[in-house]
Length: 55
Image (cartoon, rainbow, N blue to C red; front, side):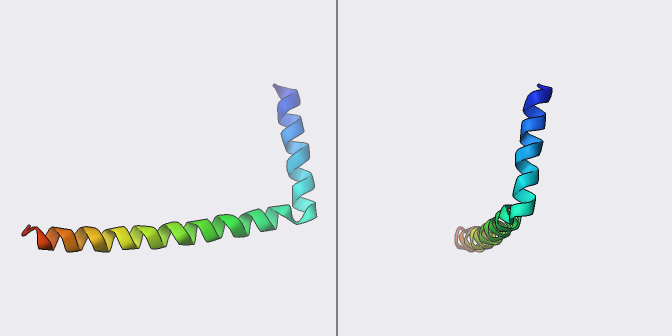
C-alpha cells in the first residue's frame, strides 16, 4: 500500500513540474463553468415548467 502511495506521489510531483498540473487545473475550471451553465439552464427550465403547470 505504501509503495502505491509513493508511486502516486512520484507521478504527481513530476506532473507539477512539467506543467501538466496547470493544464489539468484549467480543464477542471472549464468543466466547472460548463456544469454551472447547465445548472442555470435546468433551473430556468424547472421554473418555466412550474409556472406552466399552474403551481
